[in-house]
Image (cartoon, rainbow over all chains, first blue to last red):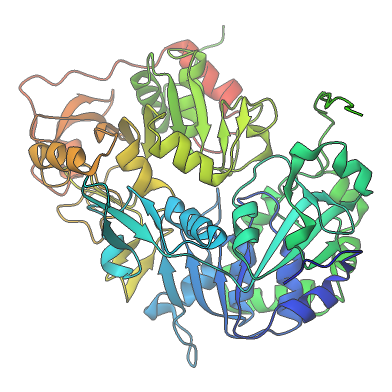
Length: 313
Length: 259
């Protein structure tokens, strides 16, 4: 896909409608940092079904999408509410005793962090597997037949391998991009780049759209080139309640509140109605919280010193 | 100076773990109590220690106590941010980590850990978070320290699921296997609980090293699911100093969120 030039700026509604389909494997990545909740909510609003949701750390965004009935399967390496505890909506779909009448268990395919990163790397490099030392004497290969061993061709024994992961669509949040989709990011990088290069389609969601000259003034900051990006969405506060380094803090209070909300299926449904279904888009979500709420999440400034690339005309 | 309250069991745990880090250079940090222990060590017994956070930071200098492993405070003022691929490949599997902290829902006498499920895997009673980086920290960090509260539910004869290998079925097998696999790590060296500190003997089995002030041997033994090896003389864990308690209470966890 992609390869197109010119502006790829789209609304979130149009980007999701065009690039996320029922049955797709979707990777909304971002390790604690820069998780596109705005995209997750729009997928819920557009009632996508039977998605395979891939993410190292499913976080609240997949708990909400599972609660909304979007998912049939999870591919992950750490399933929790970071710093708080469990993802209760997902637990209700993975623990038989907690399963509601008429619901089915989610399919689960799990790895370790290195294994999950390796899957994206193999996918991005178009390789048949990624070798790693993890998994000997762990029960993980016993429950995930896709974790296998291969003989080293150099005669030094066996090494574990994980298969490539090529999501149908990767959705990546970042600080800024130009309209062509050249994405710049700083802070925790997660596996945004690897997931994007592995995916068949890429939606980049950013806090700020900047002129291409801003991107080119600091090329080391670019993690994903517009070449592989299909749609660029300008969505300020689109990562809330996760955070964007330098722009707004992680809303830890909300992560704690979700623990209470998500323990109760009815409260979870009520939250989804109030904060997702009954709102048209992210701008309405931001307005509903109000400017003062986000002001409290805004850090004081700590700019980097500028570096000098030199002018070589 | 006003009179200090005596140390709580969580504080005893944090201080014992911090002291075990004396002189260590590169430490892979976990959230919660390990995070406080590591930050206490950096202010006391290990000022040169580099803090590595699983979220992708080398040389963190957190200005506040992070709630999550990926808090923005670990980035600002750090030496380097690194991608997940670099963190797990170059830093961890590449052998640059001296100490890794792990915990879990269950541990056995060889320091093997379960963070995946309670009950059967396909029909679990409790679905736990899973490995995260634990499975690779366990084999690649040069040594592993464990912080866990002890009870017969968590210190078990047999794990429901082995997420992260410790000393497997005993030290001889562990050493052979770790060498065969090319693993950089030597496995768990210290387990700190709310009641005691443990090491591992030459068979790779957990052995009592000291009992915290206020705890008794009976209490220690009755909250472990196997016949614990107890050496002839077990000393008391040295009590926290006034300065260690002040650092925890005033600087590291002023709201008492963790300790």
